Length: 427
View 1: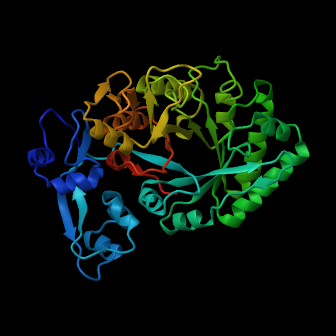
View 2: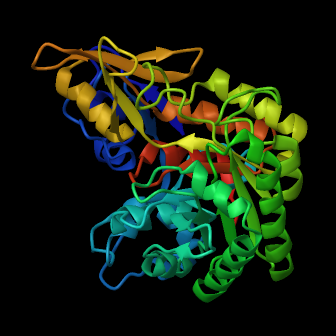
View 3: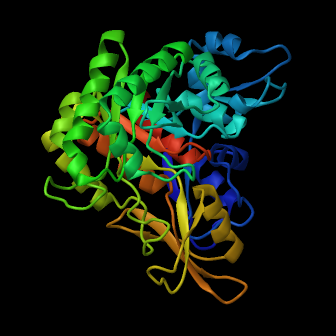
């Protein structure tokens, strides 16, 4: 895998010739939104094939995998676009193998998704995942579950060996985290027990293999009640062979204060849970000042604190799969960013003909542009370089893996980096 950063005057044809590949290979691998209009500073991944196969009438993925003594998943990871097709078409060229370094580690990769995910995006993402976490079941303080439409997603996942994890979150009808719903359940022991009964029944009925407890903005005075709830869940799930995963706010010490942090006791929760997701993203956020969503220096601080108090084999690093566009000047309390996919961020840079800069400390790309109304904007996003820098922390700190928030948009660079660095743990 080569990460190429576009320089002034370069064209796709010239870049492809430099590495001895076809322009079509670079376009397909990166799903380039701007092949005729590359942006200075844009990064793309170049994979140099060592084995390719041209599909003929009647071919199946199983047949081709057997021919080359590889798995169907390997073919799909090398050619994710195939997963979105109903069948192979004669003349299509599949990448079987390419020049790559040996993988550096094994990683558990969990992907979060909403029920309304595009089916093609869903199928393309699944070969890169160990588990899929379906967001989100809600609940009432009396213990009733508020379900989602998940049957089709679960069935599709099981077709390719990616089992589901149920996500549980105290959400209002407007899909906002509701501190009161969580508190009322914590103090209602009968309702809490009924909720866990309903969780177990639903998990067994639908084939969920674990529960992801995503409780954010818990009242600090409910800290011990929250820990007790996690313990109650774990005591019910563990004898059934079911996992308990807990999402934790990005803390850099045990002394951090504030509604987001205080009830998330890393040592106590880490000792109970099978896995924890450290939500290492949202430094740059919808209502906050412009900056990288997951600056590498901040991410490292959280992870280093995490491994100091939690078994590193339980830790999943949060990976954001989205970007933000802010109109300038930013006015706190008034400004709100626009959320984009990383591919949309690249397309927007091409639209306005800007140069993409790269922040070496945050290890993140960004650019400025002025729209048709004369308003200046700044966009912070992720690219192959930033994803590579973040994901390498998994091996460096010997973490269990990563949790991608979220997989609603397919970002080729993210998955090509995962495919390059890791053997993906099977679910």
